[in-house]
Length: 211
Image 1 (spheres, one colour):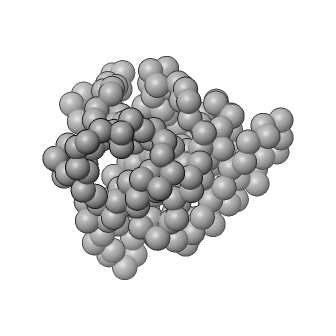
Image 2 (tube, one colour; image 1 turned 135 degrees about the vertical axis):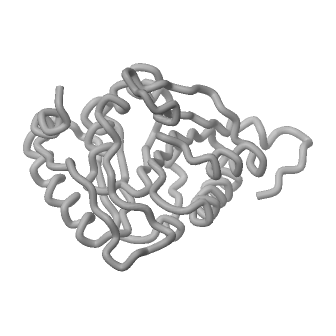
Image 3 (cartoon, one colour; image 1 turned 180 degrees about the vertical axis):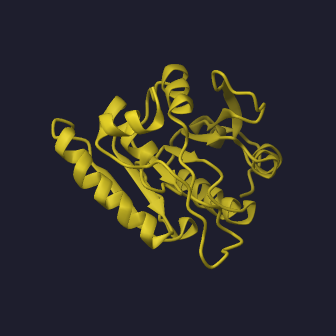
């Protein structure tokens, strides 16, 4: 099924790209995660034990709507582009007409990812290379601080992972890889999903953890 047909089923419009007009070096263009990647994620991850999902760089909301619709989980999207954020709100209004039966909330917040206050209920975070590794580090540190205060297991879902993201997570954080998901039919070896996990039990060890 094509991207537009998938969108139509959800009552949304998320196809297309958008570059930053002012050349924001720290933020990447809007580009939605392909539905074939989301289908692969859904089949292999299934969001068991997840309380609330946060999508950093949520764009027009495709990931948020997909997860909310398929798993009926609370989802929060964070978007820094004002025009794209407004489009996400328009999509939400149309989507809700088709998803009135789903009680879980779906929200979009306008602002910088590194300024989002991690909620103690947030335990799954999605990234599709929305910004530089410099900002990524700040976001991960915010997540770690929240987990230190409110102990819980948290997962990071990273589609088409940048090497800089992987290097940082694997050398400078207690996150470990729990799954690698190949996207069916992908010719690019980078077109995959890596899931990292930080188990709550890591805080019960004697090992010193520096954030």
